[in-house]
Image (tube, rainbow, N blue to C red; front, side, top):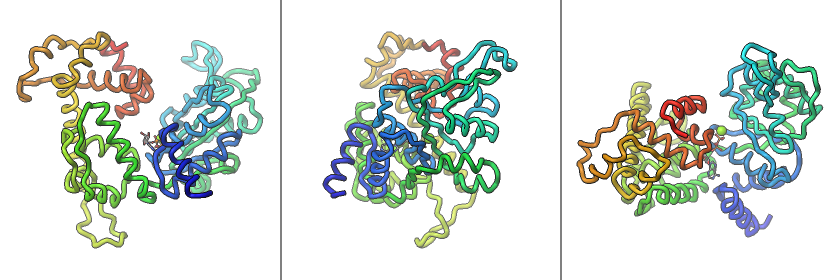
Length: 387
Ligand SMILES: Nc1ncnc2c1ncn2[C@@H]1O[C@H](COP(=O)(O)OP(=O)(O)O)[C@@H](O)[C@H]1O
Ligand SMILES: [Mg+2]
């Protein structure tokens, strides 16, 4: 394809599907998405964690004829064995202890649409057999049922595991592997598509500034270069976190190289061609992880403070956010930070409300953003009486 045309394509994907990037490997991924989207082919999306596999699945769905039907995601690694099967295929009343009602599974719920099986490499062998049957015959039975149900579901799958190795270790069925492996999209890690880093950074910076009402002085060239040189083991997810953190902690001040260095975990790989500065001991690495966790807390506290005191008092006043200490807020507006004492529970509650607002009530995404399980989120919503 002409490079002009490719550019146009990349712009379309960025503006309409939120998929940012212009590197050659990403353009190839975009090309594959376009090819497979209009078909019903099963697609296996492979790549490290945080490379954008879920986003790609979404893009495929949105560019398909099924776009007005549901796209459902099942994380096969997060659901305990035994429950996964009934989640996928549903169950009949009384089919096992606790099955007090008949329940529809994901395959039925996604009928006409797309089902995204994330972390398929974690799927238990017994469930794999059943999955293969749906893929081949387009039919299945509910757990404890005896009626054959037919469905029209397009399946997309993702993994960060080498499935071939899993097959060799007999953790993954060979027949299912061949079935899934027909069409593959490999998403390269961020360190292999450095040309995407700058546009991603700018995109995430715009997001965080808009959401937090920050006027940002930008990054220095050095800062960009440091980000382009870093290995990003957590890929785009890590990049986004770092961008958000440096901007919020710096309150919009210009971000330079040393600030970036402070926020990325420098694990020097001994086999790289760089002069080895110092190979970190596990002690040092551990300390860095703790340091990063502390930084995360600091960001949270900063956000809460600006939320309560600064430009977002309006937000606090919104009727559906019923803060237990709302009246205090107006009184404490010019107290110094030492006098601002919130309990962990209050902070947690605020973070949850914020995440829910940000994702317009979508609990799955809110839980993901908060780094907690969906079940934990439900428990906390109940605990804090959040609607
Ligand atoms: N090309 C991209 N452009 C913009 N954001 C992206 C891109 N790829 C990934 N992201 C963002 O990075 C984060 C991780 O992506 P996700 O699709 O969940 O990765 P994975 O499923 O591979 O772990 C998400 O917040 C996602 O929105
Ligand atoms: Mg994922």
